[in-house]
Length: 210
Image (cartoon, rainbow, N blue to C red; front, side, top):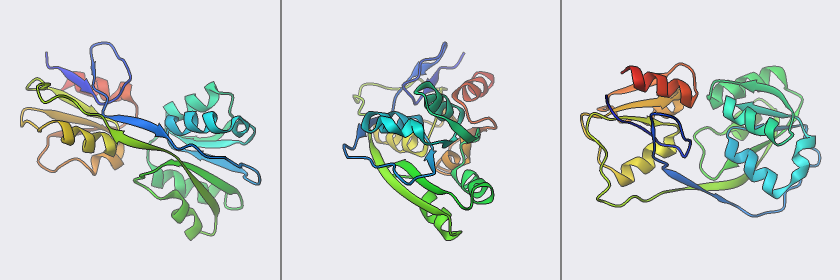
């Protein structure tokens, strides 16, 4: 049986958690007045905003991914529209079609793989953004070596970048990724699989079946 590493702090039976990134809150005053809808693309954005301004729960939200939606609801927020697939561009297109007259506030990390604000504004949809947190790579000691023939689950482009700062890729490894955005950052010489359902549970199932 091959070893499965998950590049996330989440704990799952039969899988070794191998967190790749740490989150750092960017302290600031948050004004949500005049905003019709909030855009969340990660559960970390939800937790960060909640630490900075509790009044966000009064504003309906749109979200990407099941975990993001769960985080919003757990803190008392209201989700009026969600996309279970973790694809930013797909969600942006849907917002243009469904809510062209609304004013959005995009809550984001310092580095992003898709620019919601620019996309929505290109269709004359009002959108502001706030950078709530930044991600930094965790560091692992050089003596920490992953087992050969392992399957490694990547949950975002950042986890791939941080993995390569810590480890050399072995030809016996296989990668499983969440979503097409993350897949685009996989080096071409890697053996990789993409989950049709963008959840960690789905990725684990694929990893177990390889």
